[in-house]
Image (tube, rainbow, N blue to C red):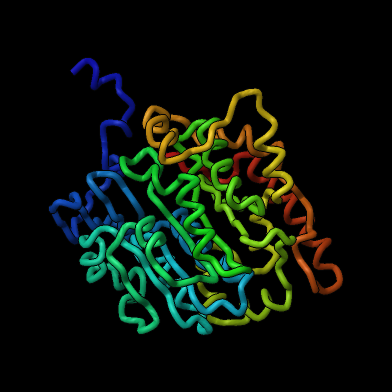
Length: 363
């Protein structure tokens, strides 16, 4: 008991809930794939928990990166027709992808049958995504699906669990990214979620370096507690066409989705890009430590990050922020004055991060 008394609260309380909440278990499943719970808090927050670990919830902080994982790569791909989503979760990313009417095929990979069964209780969260005829659901491991599918995709968006979770390390390996690369069309885009919490600065660099070895044309987008790595198969400069962005924001469904996470304008969307590929390269090179590559034969992240549970977001920001970029060269066909406005809002966003006014997430 003495040891427990000195242990940090979040280590003991595996559900990672607030001390004063009285959660209601909406759905519970026990099987060979683990123990899954859908939990609803009094404030209507819905949580998806696997083996006591919170995998997803529909709070504003979480919804922001779920929704951006859908729209961010599709803003670069106006002619995209085929999308692969690795991980179903609460279905929020899938719901946002489905808001793009030009898409013809959306393949969703989910390894846990219990997560699929839980969707019956999540229709109010994701709009009953499984009923959309464009969606093809596959019960499979993301890596195995990519290895054996013959389909080619315009966009692959992936949201693996934190690499500290047993078995997740394979979804952060060089071999996995190579499979993604092989299944992307020539102008294909990949979007990879990456945590900034419960991971050391060195492990974070390992994770980024591993992806960059396959997708050197990768930029970094920041939302509190996380980054989104936007990688392109092409080596050409990746640019956003203002006319495409304007047409997307003119779509009421897409605009409402952005507005629900506090993004009301194109400027507020674009300012989330904090590092260009050149800055990513500089970030990876400016360290005296040897940065290994995470591979199946050397699964550094899976074996190292469990010991980094208490490392905060701020520790990673300290190493990341010196390399942020304020360039506007990634936007074309912008109207007069727009690029000046983008420079201003970029500067404001970076100052906000530095001042700590953005609430960091450290679960």
